[in-house]
Structure formats: C-alpha cells, structure tokens
Image (cartoon, rainbow, N blue to C red; front, side):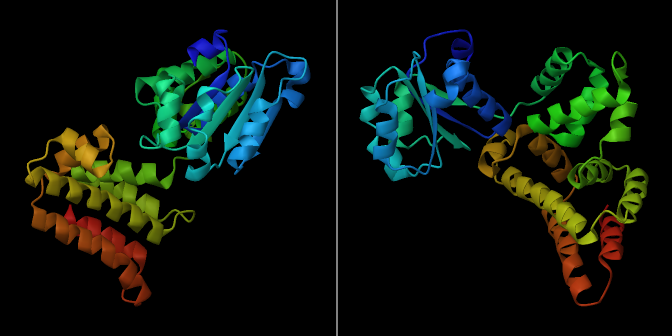
Length: 319
C-alpha cells in the first residue's frame, strides 16, 4: 500500500481482504484515485457477483484517454475466482484488477495463492493497542483537533477497533469542544455512550478481581438503566463466564495462553484476563456459575423471577 500511495506503477491483479472494513475501503479508494479524476467515472468499473467472462472483458478494455483502468470485483464466488487463476498472470498491465473480499485471507484459494505469488495481496487487519492511539492522534492532527492521550484511550475502550466509528466520534468531539480546545476524558464521557459490552466487561473485571462492592454497585446502576435490556445483559455476562470456562479447560489440558488464544480464536489480551480469572476458581465452580447465568432466561420465561433480579443474584452468589 505504501508503494501504491507513494506513486509506484499500478497494473495487473491485486487481492484485498481483511477484517477492518475502514482500511479495506480506503485501500480500494487509494487504487481508484490513481486514475485521472476528470476521467475516473469512465475508467472505473465495479462488478458485483460477476461471471469470470465479465471480469475478463472488463479487464481487457483499454483505458479511456488515461494510462489506467481500475476494475473492482466484489462478492465473487470460488468458481469465478478459480477460473481466473491463469488469466491474471497474462492480463494487460493497463488495468488494475482488484479482487475485494472482506474477512480473513482465503489461504487455500487458488486465485488468492496466485496473486500472493505476485506479491500483490494486502490484508487489512484491525489495529490494536498503540496502533489505535496512533491512528486517532494522526486523524486529530489532520483535522486540527487537540486530543489528550487519555481521551483517546477512553474512546478506544468505548468503541474498540472500529476505525470508522473512532474517526466519526473524533470529529464530533472536535466540534463539541470547539476549534483549538482540547478533547479530554470529560468530553468523551459527556458525548460518547459506551456500549453494553464495555460496561459488562468493566463490571466483570471488578468482580473477577475481588472488587465486589464496586462491581455490584455498577451492576445495579446498569440493570436500573431503562435503555438497557436485562436479558441482553445476562447473555453478555454468561458469554464472559463461558470464555473463562473455555480457557480453564485449555489450561487444564496443558495448553499455554498463546496456544489457548489460537485454539479458541481469541485475542491474546482477553485470554490473559480470562486465564487470571480461571485460576481463581475450580472447574466445578465455573460450571456452576455458568449454569446460574444461563438459567436467567429460563427463570424469566417461566415467570419464576425477573431477569434483573436473577442477574443481580447470580453475581451476588458467585463472586
């Protein structure tokens, strides 16, 4: 991508994939922007769910009074992709043929492997940790916004690695504080509502670490919030306990935290947190805890107890 943006020659087949839609879309736009802006509409073709013949015909079309044509292929199936495996090796370099598939790289796909052999595969993966903070600081600088590092960290805690949401929220905060003023934690708290999952994670973090008084106080505030759904919250709580239980099983089986993360498809940091919690409970205790959270939905549907009450009781009894 640095070569493409920096002015390197463009042409032939490319394969863009990844789990970060913001960066993926920016990557596609970066290629399209290599065409003459006055002639861009005539030299850009976007194909959705096309047949192989359609893709080849579009790629063979010469650019209209420009040096480059861009063909973006989306929603293509495996048969279509495989039929073009040989073609991409001899296609005209006056066309940038861009295969775009959100999600993890299809490592076993013949077309993917063929483009990879040409060194033209880009995987746009979600940013993590300091990368997210650096992204926010760069976007803040680009837009003349003064952003406290602590405020950036709070935004990341609330919004995760969704770069589109982070950028939109940053621009909103910049307008809220006014030009030249700092975006602080106070501004973030005033304008950004943390998602339920972030609130549950914070509460469970307190409960697992032994800060029961703080955790229960925050839980009561959460279940009394009319905008929250107790059944939905119970699902998030049970998911948290299930993750700890799954990690416990892996640790009992002799797996390291790194092996556990790979086996469960989890990020290293959540596994590290879950492992610390798992070591404080026996396997039987965790099973009993999970049963209590799963029973919340049953109790409500059977009229035995309100979900709010069952959730508070489960946390009170098991932490």
